Image 1 (cartoon, rainbow, N blue to C red):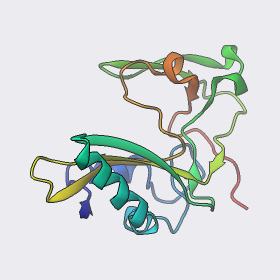
Image 2 (cartoon, rainbow, N blue to C red; image 1 turned 60 degrees about the vertical axis):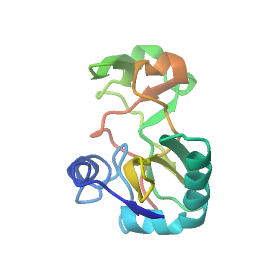
Image 3 (cartoon, rainbow, N blue to C red; image 1 turned 180 degrees about the vertical axis):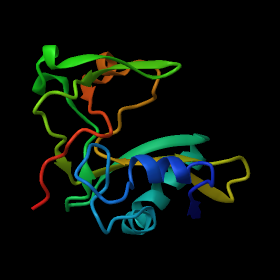
Image 4 (spheres, helix red, strand yellow; image 1 turned 30 degrees about the horizontal axis):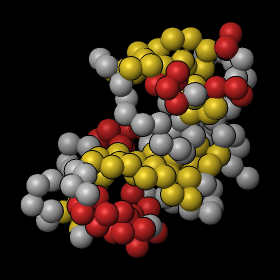
Amino acid sequence: MKIIVPNNQKPRLRNTHFRRPRLPQAGNFVPGIGWPNLVEMFREKLDHQINLAIAADELTFSITLDAKELIGWCGTVCEQQIPREDTETFTLNKRATCRMIKRNTDHEAPLTTEVTFIIRIPKGNRVALLESLYPGQDVGKLEGDVSSREKVVFFGFTHKGEALV
């Protein structure tokens, strides 16, 4: 099945996860990685998951896959890695809050080999829509207190990432 990025998602992805220049920042992919090559890298696994989702009548799903090479900087880390006094409450959207790592700390977003895909399959099943993808583990739906539910804290998108060596 063809996997496409909806036009309304392209600017958001470009401005959050594929920012230029490819600076080491939370949520950004490393230079040379783009959504077309991520989709092709995982084509077989994504096709399998899409077929399972269609069979289960699941119209939206997320999957985290390991690229086995560094592909970007995580936007979250386990809450136990960051002292609570280095975080603050943050509103992610109208429906969700989280704990955000304060900007004036020395914590760096870690490099990761994992990528999360969020895919929606419209009725009719002619194409699969890549609604989002980001470096790191799936944090689930952005509803409620995401940090409490998922046991993670978030980096802001301008937060510095580990050096790429």
